[in-house]
Structure formats: structure tokens, C-alpha cells
Image (tube, rainbow, N blue to C red):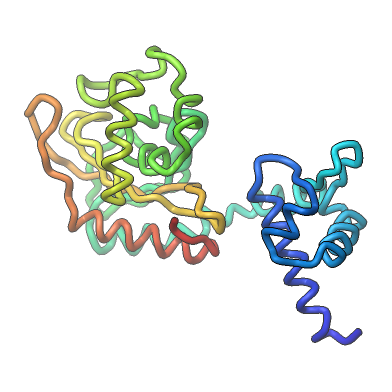
Length: 261
């Protein structure tokens, strides 16, 4: 078998791994075959080869297949190389140079926003955010940009009780009902905002970054000084700024091989 004839098999093998990765747990071979529109015989052959290489594990008693230890090792190596931060850095730098506001790359860590990258303009304004800082995700634009695209059950699991809704100022969602209402709006608009939820006289705009399965894995946010003394915040949503931040998030999504839903 020549090199060129190996390519379709390689592509099919990678498609099998992607299919297994898209499910919450092991699945029957029939599910893989149906998802990829492959003959069952071909599917079993691919699964057997991937199992032999350690990328797939066969749970014989359940007649299901899941990702194996080799797939985990690849994922761990991917994380060690910090590709998300490396790819995001230049995009954030260009965003800051253009808008002259502080930009962040954030991810969810439980029900908190964790900041992985921070880029500042030449004359930055002081903010509480920094690399490694964690803040309540329901208060931050970066956190809610991700939460808005998660299943309702997952959001409920992250915020199971009233005590989950910590507050830093007198603004922000106070319970699950208010959070879901806010997330519904932000899911429709395509970006999340916070106006004094974290620090008085500062606001942020954030947009989600997606992986290949349209799952939100991070967000890009921009923070700027904004004095608003109206209780609950003003009605400003900064659509022009959001369009610029969204373009940066889409660029990072593309570089990661992801796609928006």
C-alpha cells in the first residue's frame, strides 16, 4: 500500500477519534459508523487499529468504545506546549495596539474565570485582573461569554445554590434565574458585558473562542474605564468595541481549528 493510499485511512481514523471525543462517554461502534456514514466492517477495522495503538479502549462487557491512554497523552502534551496562550498572544497584542485598552484571554476554572494572558497598552489603567487571577465567572464578561454557550444543566451544576453567587459590588446576577436571563441575552447578541460588576468604574466586553466541536473553551475580553453611577448599570453595550473583540475571538477560533456554532 503506497503513501497516497494511506491518507484516506488516516483521515478516517482521525474522524473516529474526533467522534469519540465529542461524546461524554464510551459509545457503541454503531454510533461511530452512523455518525461517519461508514460501513460497520470499516468502522470495526479502524477501531481495532486505534485500539492496538492505544488511542481507543474497548469496553467489551459494555460493547462500547472510548478514548484510550494514548489520546490522553497527546492531549497532555498539547497542554504542556501552551498552544492556546501562544496563539492568543499576538492576537491580543494587535487588539491592544488598535484599541488601547487592556485585553485578556480567559478560561473557566470551575465557576470562576481564570486569566491566562494579559496584554496592556503603553499607558494602562489599573485593573484587578492579571495572569493567574481567578474571579467569579458570573460577574465577569469573560466568564459569561463562555457560560452563555454551555448547556443549562452544566450552568446549574456550576452554580448549585444561592451562596454560589458571590458579589464584589452591588451589581451583577444574584441568583440562577438572573444569570440565565443575562446569558440568554448575551448568547443572542454574541458578546458579554460587565459594567462595574467586578470593579467600580470599569467595564468589559468579551467574546467566546470555540474548539472544533463548537464547544466554548476560552474568551477574549477587553477592559476599560467607564464611570456609570446608575444603579444596575447603564444600557450601553458597546457594539463597535464588541465587533473588534469578536473578530479577534474568531481569529483565535480559526487558528485553533475551531468553529462557532
